[in-house]
Image (cartoon, rainbow, N blue to C red; front, side, top):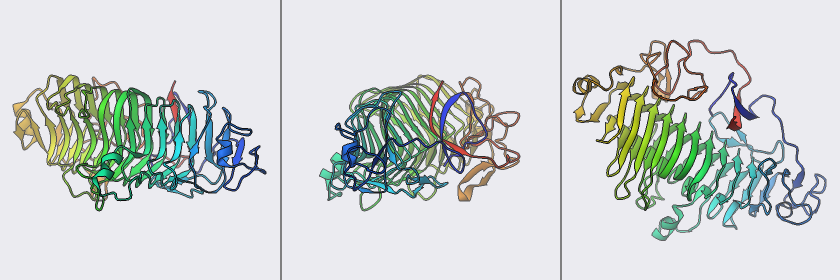
Length: 501
């Protein structure tokens, strides 16, 4: 999926290699579908129930339990916790784990957890558990359930065709309950990493997040697609990072048509303090980045950064929204301090739409360095109490609805001389928009035309391809930084774990 290469910085990395040297964790216990041993050695493997239980031979903190190829018709659930420095890992035997194609799809998964006869395929019901390299399917409730535990890691799995709780999926009793299920079901759990998974065709949501004050959630570099309702749904917590994901094709299609549910790429409907939505690719859903307070209580979003995302329409036929922030009645919340920058949004009915409805937008709202092209409404802002700065954006074939209706950027500037002072109206010159290639071509007016003054940027600051910004005399507008010459071929690595030091 996202290729990050040639740049290393003050983060701790453990890399999963694509064609390069990688470290393979040593297996300490071995499991097979026909295992009957108690010591769980490679020559005398045990059953999954033995390895994950509390008896002789079961996994202890620091153990790496390697599952040999085959289909396990049971629930994987650890009876013991790991520790912060010694997780218990359940993973595919080396060489039998899921591999990843360039487009983020998985192949070669030789270890399957089939939950057809269970409520959940994988249950993380202890602290500091890692699940890695498995094909996880047919859980009646969810594929992976994490319920109230700390330090879980779900990495490099193929999680698909779960949440088939009700045989008759078109009945109201079916979708009314199961709409709160997902391929990954995370509830009241802190310090969770969900990375490098393919989450596909789960009957409800790809990832559902429910609970109170979920801390330090990282959803990184996943391919989340063709789930029936939302790609990611939920909210309520602090310090969330949703980065480098590909989230697409969520359309609530026939024959499912789950009642009133609209299908979104990312719907966060409860408050979050410290939310970063960075360098993701979104396409083909009703709403792509949707922040809303509408779930039974007043929820507030504080300190939100939406940056570096690519949002476009590929095959979707309905009117869609790109970035949509609204405090919906009757649960009127507050959004405080919102930065929306360095995004490319194309082909939407409404590209960037921000409004309080009945709540408030307060603090600073910065809209900068965004490419907004071929949308019906490029920018829509409702009256609010915030200090708004919108500048250095590029508009093309998009109207502006803010303190009036303006068919062109020049009309808006004449009526609102303090806003969009340096913004431009021009064709952005994409590499191949017809084939969804939104890189900038030589001569694009977006090159070196940006300015992010007043916005706190990460160090290093990367575009959606992992290219260091800026490359020229200034920042490029949009999700991609133009590179005049391609760098020489080199070993390309993707992150499997990181944390700021």
